[in-house]
View 1 (spheres, protein in one colour):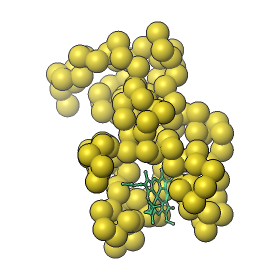
View 2 (cartoon, protein in one colour):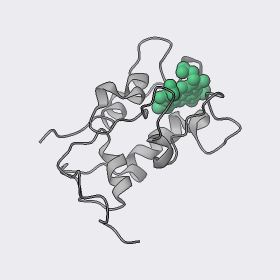
View 3 (spheres, protein in one colour):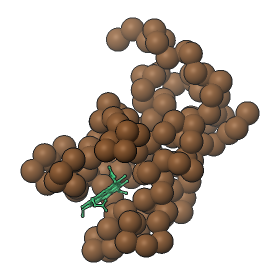
Length: 133
Ligand code: HEC
């Protein structure tokens, strides 16, 4: 696969999820983080464990019914939602719906309380940009 075609442009911008960024670039070392987070090795297993049950490859189980959210593929994770914004906003964890959901203290929490699963703080940390510089 040819690499580097369209992905160098934002290399100085810090991304919300270094792993997603590395994933989208299909190569490592493009971004400034000392230890790039690997989407496949680090981020995907977390989403897979906590989210794919309802936001994964199985279209029959996907939630919410009205406008199902898919997180198993980058192209869907960055698609605009009903409010016109993707749930992951690169470089802006604080306004990203996905980050708001995994850190929510109310009924908005993901995965939903009924799942009896809680994302660990160190797993949540992966979703934040690692380096402003
Ligand atoms: C048991 C099923 C279930 C699991 C597991 C689950 N979700 Fe959800 N998710 C839902 C449902 C149902 C909704 C719609 C209702 C709502 O907005 O709370 C939703 C909505 C969302 C939304 C808002 C979508 C939008 O367009 O507003 C985000 C973001 C989200 N989930 C992220 C996650 C993430 C990240 C995980 C894993 C950490 C996760 N969810 C795990 C069921 C689930």
